[in-house]
Length: 186
Image (cartoon, rainbow, N blue to C red; front, side, top):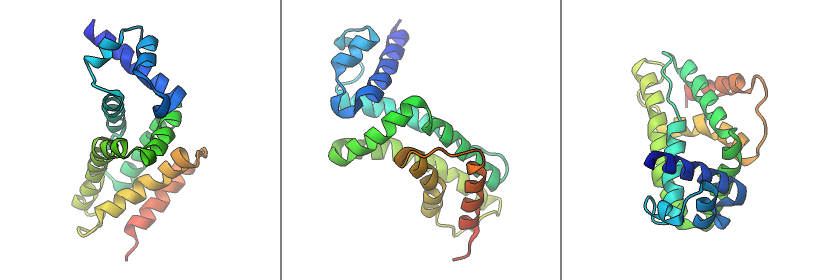
């Protein structure tokens, strides 16, 4: 029963967040949508910020799978496919841009998402490049911070910021460009 209530709250939270955005999100509306009392939410999370950070970080970190295909090219291509799938999810298409905008107005939210979403996601993505260094596909002195920016930036920009579809061969072409950038001698 406890798990069913938590699942209902989680589903209601994401639906409500996608529909109204963080600024207008209310615990009352989430409770009503979930078919529970507000107390059921407050037993699990102390505030709107807490539920937002807990649920979005759990989903966002889990959504980034770091594949091990045996090659840097294969890992990048699969990573991009997984990220594309996550960013084009109907709820994510509304939630991600809203939270980005809200974070510019709300430093507490921005800081919380930095520590619970960005940092763990980047740590997971770093393993992709660490394996490539171990396999000799990238030099040991590779700038992993820059590698992660190059990996995530273009697709995230296209899907979450300018909201432009990718097209049939976009991920293959992007993989080629990322590989070229990563292996270019400085």
